[in-house]
Image (tube, rainbow, N blue to C red; front, top):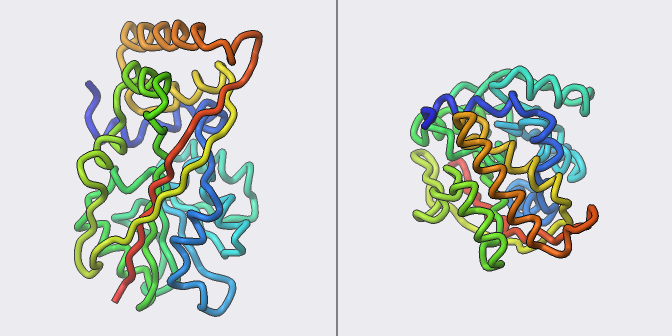
Length: 250
């Protein structure tokens, strides 16, 4: 199995699959994360850290925030710049943010905090936030209460994010206090091709040995062939539970 560091920086190898297969984020989840700073003078200054191709960046822009996108992967940043040329896109991580002290109203991470060292990340995010600023963490987790979704997860293996959520959720450190949490249930229509793209965008599959990747993809195609909704290029609703967390910088 690949190392945690290799997995965390693997996504740029599958930019197209990531963009095609990964979901966006419910606007209400973003509104909830930013609620503690909603009364700040507009526009809110927000850093989307681990921005990837800009899935969360898009929703932050819809919210009306002044967004800075931060990611360590040059290929992901290139894709984000092509899609969102007006958004500053900078190389960096939660542990090393390319912004001045106290310059942000909020820092948000979508599908990313599980790659962060929580003590160093908390200290650095606190440096970048103004007092009273918000740290928001969000994950889209497939809803395994649907049997076919549970089987798909079994084939693909649980991700680091799914394991972290199952083991009690994310951890932050001083100066941040306890995390508040909200859940949002929704679904999106997916073809077999998009489901396969989603699987191929996961770090476990990206970094797997070729024979393991072929076996996993074959098992997924067998599963998709058993779902009548996907026959002839059809679509099936993939259910999600979005898990959002927030805390405030003292």
